[in-house]
Image 1 (cartoon, rainbow, N blue to C red):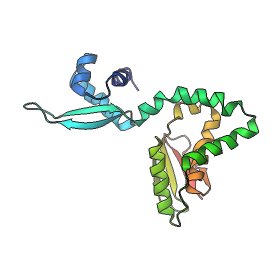
Image 2: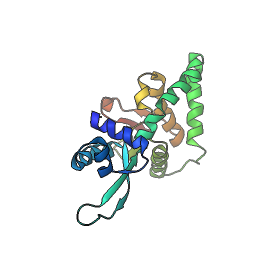
Image 3: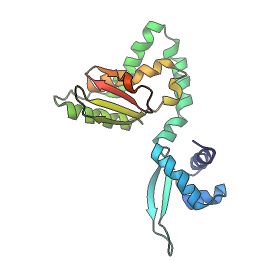
Image 4: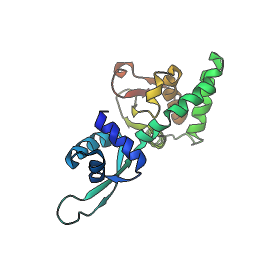
Amino acid sequence: MNQTQRAIIHEMKKHPSITSAELARILELTPSDIRHHLAGLLAEGWVVMTDEQPAKGRGRPAHRYQLGSRAKSEAISSLLQAVMKATILTLPENEQTAALHRVAESLAGSTPPSPSMSISLTRTVNRLNELGYRARWEARAGAPRIYLDYSPYENIAKQIPLLQTFDAILLENLLQRPVRQDSTEINQKYHSFLVG
């Protein structure tokens, strides 16, 4: 994220719904420059378009924007980090993974297993997206694959390495099947998991 995009996010925290023209006035930039930066923020999930107002006279309709799920999850990262340090990370090392399993069970809920793999994968992706992930799945030869293009705590996972295992634990709870991270794509922007 560049400096202008950070300034846009900062202003959007103060204004729950705002147009590009309003942002341009506040930040003293051109509307086209703001729209350019908003396009990048939209693509990355930092902002979402909420509605469209008809143009006054000629010109483009005015789109309203608000913070997206990625910006909202960014806002709670420091809280999550503090909670992890005050609870799970204070446990003996052999109990920390068990605590993560309990958290994953709670988040997964009690959806009955589906005999259809595609229904199970669709439910899993839908639940992950409700939780702030950007998840999708693809049918592949050998085994289906779930992609996590974004994880709501990815910015603190490097500081708390235990969190790097949580995605797999949560996926196994949601799917009620084993998963393994695809090591051939581990350096990509997304994380990929093979099911089964």
